[in-house]
Amino acid sequence: MTTLMDEDLLSTARNLKGRVVLITGGGNGVGREASILFAKYGARVVIGDVDVKGGNWARQECEKVGKLLGGGAIFKRCDVSSWEEQVALFTAAVETYWRIDCVVINAGMNTLLALHIILMSSRRYGFFTPMYRYTNPPAKPKLGILDVNLVGAIYTAGLAQHYLLQNEGPRGSIIFVGSMTSFNPVGKVEIYTASKHGLLAFHDSLHHVLAEQGIHSAIICPHVMNTGVLDVSSLLGVAGVPLTPVPRVAKTILHAASEQETRSDSGAIYVLPDAGPALRVACGELDNIHEVVKERVERMIV
Image 1 (cartoon, rainbow, N blue to C red):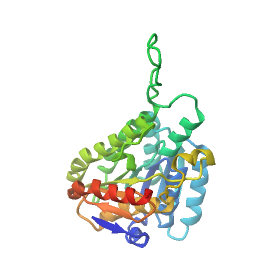
Image 2 (image 1 turned 90 degrees about the vertical axis):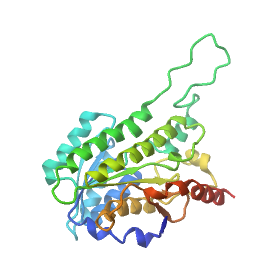
Image 3 (image 1 turned 180 degrees about the horizontal axis):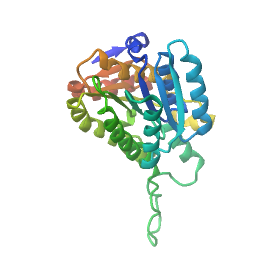
C-alpha cells in the first residue's frame, strides 16, 4: 500500500503526451477537472456528457490549456445509459483521432446528488417508501441510477476493451471511477451504494482478463466531493465532514491512466477516504484496505 502526495500523482503525467483519452461524464465535476488536466499534459481528449453546455465549455478549456503540448479535445453528447449513444461516442473518437489509448469510466450520479434528491423530495429516492397500511403494494422503485452508474459503466468497459484491443504495442488503460460507498454502505442512498459496490466487483472480476490482454486497469474510490453544482441545502447531509478535493481526485485519475508505462501490475484500487492523500492499494493487498479505510474515516469524524 502506497501513500501518494499530490506531486506523486503527477510524476508520470509526461506519459500522456499525444495519447487519446475518452472520458464519460467529462463535462462537469471531477470529469471536467480530469479532462482539462489530461489536455494540459498533451493528451487529446474525447468528452462525453449529457450536458451539452458543460461539455462544450470543457472542450474549449481543454483546447486552451493543451496548446503548448499539443493537447486538445472534441465533445459529443452522450447518455451512458444508451448503448447506441456510447457506440456513437467511441466512433467519433476513432474517426477524429484514429485510435483510443485510455478510457475513463466516470459518468454517474454522485452521492451528494442522491442526497439532494432526498432532501428536495417528499418521497425517498431509489428504494421502497415505508408504508403504514398494507392494502396496496409499494411503489415501483426507481432504478435509473443503476442504468447510469453500473449498466452504463459496463457498456463503456465493453466498448473500451473492443477498441483498445485494436492497438498495436501498448494496448492502453481503462480507469473506473467508483466511490467510498464501494466499500462502506450508506443509508438512504441504497441504490447508489449498490451501484458502486457493483462497479468495484465488476472491476475486480474483469481486471485479470484485461491484464491477460495487455490492458491496464484501475479503480478510483473517492469520498464525497463538492463539485460546485449543488446548493447549500444539499450539503447539509455531510456538514462538518472534510470533503475530498476535486483536483486531487482528478490527479489520481491522471496518475492511474499514465502509470501503465512504469508498472507491470494492474487492477489497483486508489482510495481517497477523506481530505488527505490518496492511497494506492495493489490488487494483492486488498485484504488490508478495509482496516485502513475504517481508521481514516473514524479519524475524520472524531
